[in-house]
Image 1: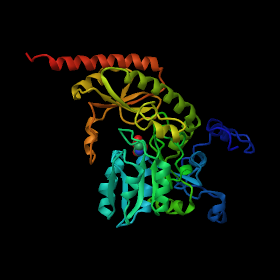
Image 2 (image 1 turned 120 degrees about the vertical axis):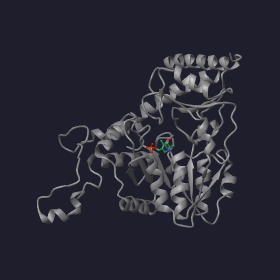
Image 3 (image 1 turned 90 degrees about the vertical axis):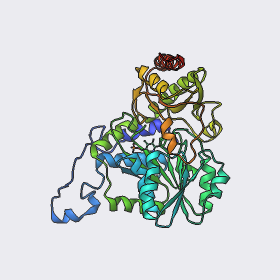
Image 4 (image 1 turned 60 degrees about the horizontal axis):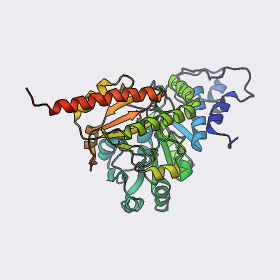
Length: 397
Ligand SMILES: *Cc1c(COP(=O)(O)O)cnc(C)c1O
């Protein structure tokens, strides 16, 4: 079984025999209350869940499949990708503990550490997004309980040497939690590389259709999993059966969508890199890009999202470019079937040490459209960028 590819395994799990005549997809059980035939049966936990807050059919199948994909003993579902980051940190950290993480951390995760954990006696230190492994390990203190890894980092897509970080942390008794949304549990398997807790926003590639929010948390070691499972139970965090059903549907086609979107993203990124309006492409999967060697060594695929550093420009030019596009939706998030564009220059100001870029920073998410059509659309966008730049040079009337 295990030597079959993900593509096969994710589908074969749906057609397994021995379950009688049934629908391919599980039933959606919407329930708070589960009824029993007798008072004795009511107390019999071997008959499955006794109350709707326990995961029901679709969520159970989704959990099992995600755990298999991640090489985990279990995977828990939470109501958002953000909750997948905050739940293990809530479970593993105590007042007086410290967290070390990247300055390129996903913004809302950073806010959680500062505001929520900060008010509860947990301090956070940041390392440079492209720091060397030795420098990161040297920044661990006696109080550091967790290294929170996000690679590639948000917005600037900086790569870290995860196997080396995981080994270094393990030797020092520091737990590693990795936000692996970019790897989607597919291109990179954190647990196999020695990371303790692998989390992802299911919202993105697993769901794949921009129609739900969900997160998953996977572990290989029961001792790490126990406090996380207890915390989720204590906090009462569960997902909706309808969302679990949709995420399971998305998961069946994840390998195909992910690979196809990465192929298109590479074509679009290469085209953009050759344009005079563009100074740099932040995409580790692109040969010649920063972080490409690490990506090539450790990753079996790539997400279809990257940064585009423009040659100078200002906000008006960035907005002119975005406004001229027809095929790129103006919206946050990624991993869905549709292409999206955002303007990120302002977001970088929240960092301890904002990077010095050659110009405006845009973020492109490439969907399942034909890449040649996306390129034609971008051609129009770049013309609007140039026109806006030129109008800045005109003497004002
Ligand atoms: C989107 C995202 C999240 C949060 O997911 P939500 O479901 O939107 O809460 C966390 N981490 C990364 C890297 C993300 O891109």
